[in-house]
Length: 323
Image: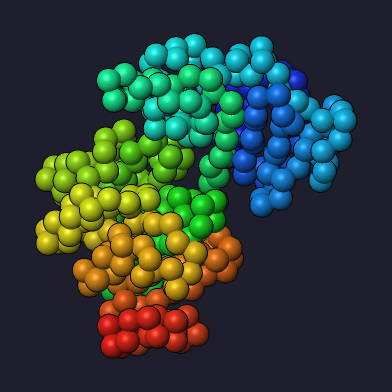
């Protein structure tokens, strides 16, 4: 499934029709960036493209590039907010809007304070639409390497837009739908509605949406008896503590964090603490989606894939910790 068509319906006729003219490239679009009084930029994988008036994609801006001006820009914002700015104010204060189909739209605006508290936003100047994709079986190769007799607990790390959420979505689908002959109980913690959305996440998967991750993790543990909990972008001590609570209750986890290399682990206190709790089995760093990755065995067990596990990068940073 490609969610771009539901996004295009929320944009202006001119932007939508221009993008649709390049129908062969639509499935490769990862981002649409719309800035007030500036050219629209469409990202094809990692490459920015400007849109000409005839719908052609340009590597550099031209005089006839598609530009979004005040009235058109305001109309797009109204559509994204479902014509209710007030209803979306809580997420707008956090810098995003969630569409009905579960797509998160990044928003840049000015903060409005009252008595020292952030109460609203105004003067939106740009939006970033990241298009979620469903790539079925993209997690299969990695699962084949790490899934043995029991469910592994994993940390997936990568830069933004390198496929962490897509990987977790497919992992949930596979593990809950008969992978290795077992239909595992999976619970997705979908705080911002980005993992599950309208996608296929498996026949034995439950989804808790729009709750703070830490609260939802505890809720899942206490009420849904999951075998594995899947959640995106772990970033707070409270979330970390709930994960530790889950491990003590016998639950496995598949979580994601932002990082770009082994060397940056020590600089990320949350990731470092996730590793130090010694409950996770593997750290997976996606270098280019699931086409290029490294897997680090956090339990120090032997692996058939010696080129990926326990390389000098981790040993150099942590010494005996990974031996």
